[in-house]
Image 1: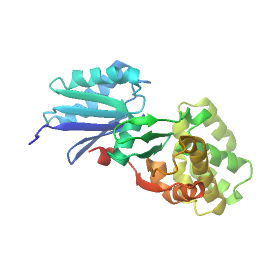
Image 2: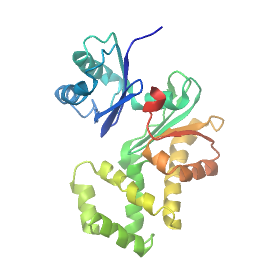
Image 3: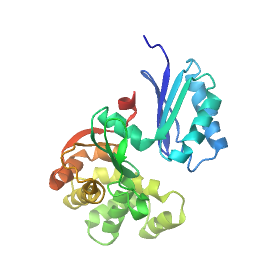
Image 4: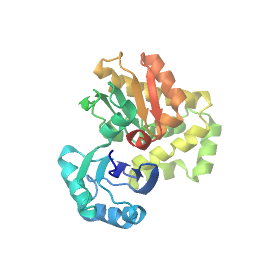
Length: 272
């Protein structure tokens, strides 16, 4: 019988979900591409350790955005420093975590549809093919950031009803000039653009907004999934955009000849 205590993490740039069995914890996001060793250690020591102090952790498996192959060692080093008694420490990118959570040991197409987007073909053990996401400026079709960008474009180019424009500017307390300033002059515009999905969700039943959401997903399938040429494989997705707009995701999948298998808001449950 294996009585080892395993700590599992799924991390984005905004937040990290941690789990030990049925117990759940949260800290701010950890991204070794954007954060230095000191910042990562500070989050682990100040935010995580007090929450898991009652556990003698034996194994750690960390999945996170920014954990590129060359940065796995950096992430594992930080975890080992904070949990010196752990006998096994792994660090992998968030796409592998999503694939394992969605597909388990089965072959399939796994997708992330949150602030950003990504996809891969997973063979039941590892990622065997990946279409580069390229970020929200060059790519990230289907993501919350691109959805927000498309929504603002439609809003101010008169492709959405005037009533939605009035409601948006009232809710956000912003004018078009404020929006342009927020996108081009403030930090982390991708996160802000993605945050607009909450407003978009509220008006999704408006035909023009519904169409805009579906078109965002259609672009995701055409530009990211079609290159795999595997219509035979089921498509699964994780992330808030996939979860809250799953009816539009299903519509886009049907239009492009794909079958949706599973949609999760967060991969942590599947990883546990």
